[in-house]
Image (cartoon, rainbow, N blue to C red; front, side, top):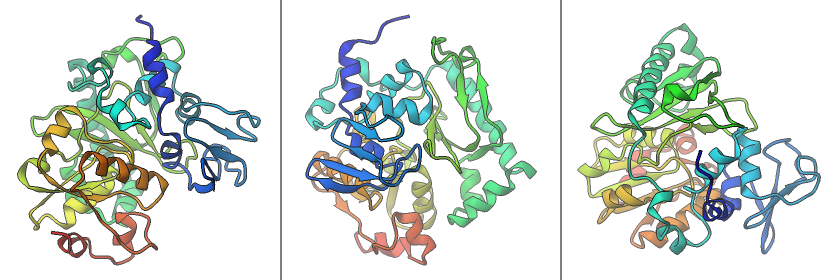
Amino acid sequence: MSTLSPSLIARAKEVDLPALAGRYTRLRRWTRSEYAGPCPFCGGRDRFHVQAQRWLCRKCTSGRWADAIAFERMRTGAGFRETVSQLANEPILDPLTLAQAPAAEYSNEPPGEAWQKRGRALVAQAAGMLWSGAGVMWRRWLRGRGITERTARLARLGCLPDRRYDPPEWWGLPREGDRPKVWLPEGLLIPCFTRDHTLWYLTIRRLNTDRGKYVRVRGHRPGLYLGDSALKHQIVVITEGELDALLVWQEVHHLPVGVATLGSATACARGRWAERLAGKRLLLALDADAAGRTGETRWLEAYPSAVPLRWPESSKDLTEYHQHGGNLAALIQAHL
């Protein structure tokens, strides 16, 4: 097994930690260089503090500062190697360093054939479960977010009613000492396919958890969700997550716009996905929170002509705006 390079470990530790932590808790500015909020792990309302590249909780870390790797391992339960590899693909504080990262640390290629085969089989199985009696709760949850059955079927959404642990060989992955199996928690399965049926990643949306609502299946590659729609239109709406993107795609299909997301607040297009968005007019629709504002800044640095969308402060994101009676088509059409 190859060892992790010191540069890769250093890169993982350079993740914008307030943006990362802001996905899982609401942060408020504490000082000029520090944020505070409820702990995403123990729920303590006055214990969690985060700075640029370190964090602490008076309960979870006994008041000692820890780095981004420790944060992500506590959130996901993943091993050190997997966590470093995943964090190395997250935006770091200096966008120039991100843009100049060695190609070996960022893959333009999809997962291998074994991963594709197992992933497609899981997608088919999970889709069957969603439209069976086991998927009643998730179908109701999707309707509550405004996503129709037609949209869910077209997106090949599915559900995993029980958590499981796959042998890594099924996915064409090596065994790791502290992470011997591939974890598949219970939740809504969201596959990222491109039009040639290549599977880039699988996201699992979990409920009733304080340890991260979204999990990427091990072995994934960075993908632009709904990115094929960006090929057809000159104007592309960039959302924070896949479910927001699906809802927008559903509601504005009659408008001359594409929709896409990289699946997180702070990820910005790189490699083949940056090429796909080159020359496009982007409408940024990231969440109205600290992580969303950080992500918006990064997109504007990379695409200065991008236009941020704004909606009433009572809604955190586009889905809440829609749930509160907002007209997504009208909101977006006003910026065309």
